[in-house]
Length: 171
Image 1 (cartoon, rainbow, N blue to C red):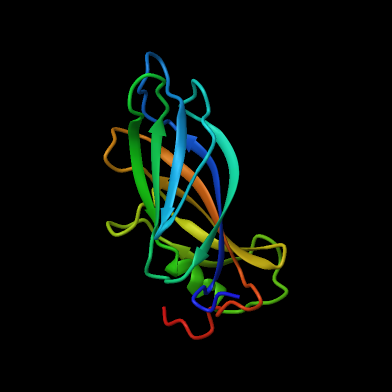
Image 2 (image 1 turned 60 degrees about the horizontal axis):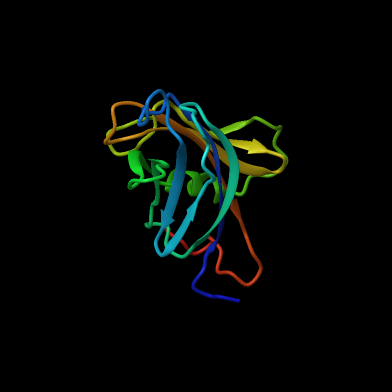
C-alpha cells in the first residue's frame, strides 16, 4: 500500500442550484474536481441550470492542507467550454469531527456546525452529521467569479488498511 496516502475522501457532487446561463436559455453544466494532481469530472447535463448529478468521486488524501477545487463549466460544441464559477472545499473542519471517533449515535445527530465566512465558500451553515455509523458533511457552496449559482456536495472519510490514517494528523 501507499504510505503517503492518509485515506480516501468520498466526494458526492449532488446538484447545482440556479447556475448561470451561458447558452441561449440555459447551460450544459459539468463539474471539474481537482485535488493536487487528481482530476475528475461529472457528466454533462444538457439544458439545465438546476442539474442533478448525484455522482460520487474517490479522492486519495495525501495532505489535509490541499483543498478540493471545484469548477463548473458549460459544455460547448464548437468553442471552448465556458466557466460558470468555482468553489473550494476546506475539509479540515470535517476531519476534526471524524477524529472525535464517536460511536453509536442516532442517525442525523449533528456533531459540529460550520458557519459561512469570508474564508470558506459556504452559502449557509453546514453540519457534520452522523449517518449509518459514520460522519458525513453536506454543504451548499456559493460559486465565485460568476453572477450566481451554488453546488450541493457531500463528503465522507474512508479509512483504508495500509494507509496512514488520521491519528497522527494535526488539525
